[in-house]
Length: 183
Image (cartoon, rainbow, N blue to C red; front, side):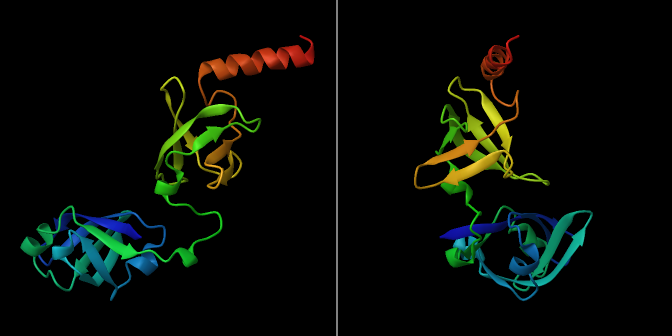
């Protein structure tokens, strides 16, 4: 399976440097100087990273095959891809395409919605869940909230804090709490 490591952005300077929209969690390894990457579209590559630097939180690279601004500008929007090695994956790591379509359940097995995507964020990714009424909810993808991902049973278990999902959920929880506490 092919995975996108980065997407080439705007040219920077006159010597072929480009800004990258990095899509990997291991840029030091995947985008190391000397690395050769396939491209999508394929006719633009493969490309070899000649230099790499970080500036103000952004990654910039220069490719050996494109050494001027005109060549670098022609790469804008090109995806840098690798062939994934699924043996390298951690036990609790999933690709976004594996999570899309999974049923989102609460710890008691009640339906919260369906996972429609994953949104990468600086602190942690967000699981995008479409609730039965169509409302989109962004769930922090951390073990404390997304307690289980079961690809075989086609579901994720979400132990959501109060108020994360639709107001109906909150009202039911409050009524249940009042009944249990005798209020």
